[in-house]
Image (cartoon, rainbow, N blue to C red):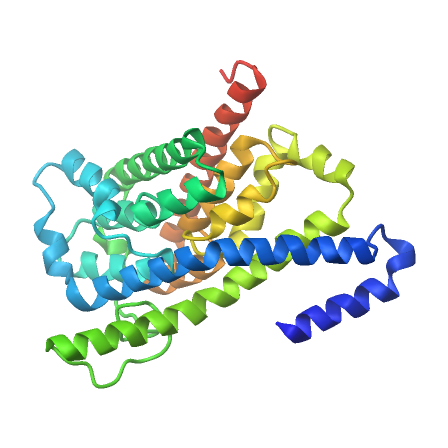
Length: 329
């Protein structure tokens, strides 16, 4: 991180005559960057500890017992299970694979995979803090995530089955979805507590680098780009959504912290585009996309990405048009 900041300083000093970035601009960069990091770290810590506790104390069989018999009830419950099992999106893909391999319907596992990283108390509280207790933004984020996950689950139940799952999962032998292995796993309480602390530490540093990268990009964009350029992109009903979804896909920030990055754009971008950032990113980003390619067949991953993307775009567009006073239909 210090090396990156040193390069940034050198870049700013060399190109200062060609950009609007000055020393005061660099100080502004540091202010935005540090504010995002400081506000987000507590929620990252909460998220990784919850994820580690679930990994070591809750099995897939226990989750499976919660599933009812009706298809619609299964999809509905899968949307809401994040309130009880708030699994981070960083390890949700391997969890979904195991659920399917243990007999959970594909549509339930996919719905849980999409909804759980967003519809949970940790993300709801972090969003409320990031947007200064704006309950409308919190409800819109959870509501849009619910609609997208539920609709996607219905479509998956009609057009796909468990045959979309690949036969092997060569990249991980643990529950957290990381590439490392956990040694000396134990079934007693002390062993599980030690593993919980170890897993939480591993996941914190794994997710911390994505948070730092995302905070750097957000601060750099807002510091270097002209306010007029940001307003031109950010106030467009479609362009703002496309820009923020692409941003979310690329930086892969944990759902426990992405609201702070979105909130830093609130003065330049539309409400719908910020919702698109906070809903699409936790569902489909670079790391999740690559993990899904190893777990599911290519055709399924591509179609799932298209379905989620179109639903998020339309939902965000409705929010943009409503807030702009335009009839979305």
